[in-house]
Length: 354
Length: 107
Image (tube, rainbow over all chains, first blue to last red):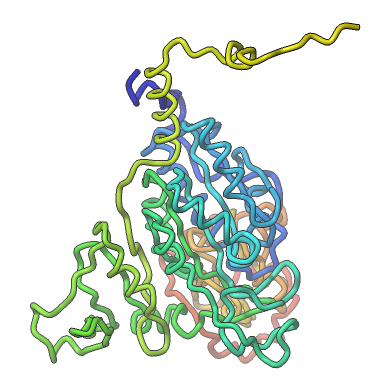
């Protein structure tokens, strides 16, 4: 049996080319606070869904959104597809069960910085290292929003919140670095305020075969307003962020006059293009199987460096469900006459009479 | 889905909405603003921000102001983007609450 037969993709192309963004809006009015960045993420995803379905030949019935707990996790109610609103931190586990048993589905995991990196840290890590074919959208607002303003695993050191009145004494996790260390095969970052970039990244994540994780900087205007304003707002974005594109130089600035380079000690520096040789300009490599460059880029942060956005890494590798199914196929080929009932009855058995 | 600026904005043009819009969806005309339906993310923050109650969800636009839905889309393509509150018209208070202002609409 060939791999193609094992993972039979349903071909129900009726209507797949004709979806509009309205087809993906459910009848539920979003309950997010007015001004929440989640509205933008929902809007951009609904806008690119028609193209995703057309490009990947995925009908709506094969689309599923699984969330955990948090404001992010309200998401499945607002998408007119199948969905699960599951338990805190465990969306990747449901995704794994679903995706392995139904590999033809397109499964999305919607989670937040609390859901995926506090209680869910373990499941996220294992999902990524298994390379399950799932698209994980991590809404990072650097706070616990739904529970009204406690600090999260991504809140800055010293952050004063309801649960850290004297300032957080823990260094934050960096979701991109965690993802890369967990060997995720597609890692990207977008911003709720930059709809074009977000759409671009979502489209690429949808096309990826394997675990695709997108960290989305999302503004919680009630409990952590302005967390990303210093580099995410339209006015400052060109100077304070660098867009990563495979094969393109790490150049940024409104006038495209600055670059990020790594010196011979592998330490990053910002330089003026005018001051360096063209040959010293580093080009981004998203396809290398060695994640060292991507990891180094993930460590760049405001204010010393421009914040990298876009695709850090995109590599091909067999997916978890491919390996699982292939192993079953191979095992059956080794022992074509395997009989489970026979195995169960192999030892001593007794029949208990009335 | 989008939000729509209707006639209460005309000649009042308070521009409080511009300050709160997270995606810079507003465009400025001579005596009113409009929302670009392509940019609007339905976050609803402009609705309470407007002191003249000029903004409605597209499904909730009053029956007699339905023409503003298409007008917002049309003028957003022509008018300049506005992302900062400018000078409010001197006679804004005079025009506040007046009905039937569409006759004064300027392209």
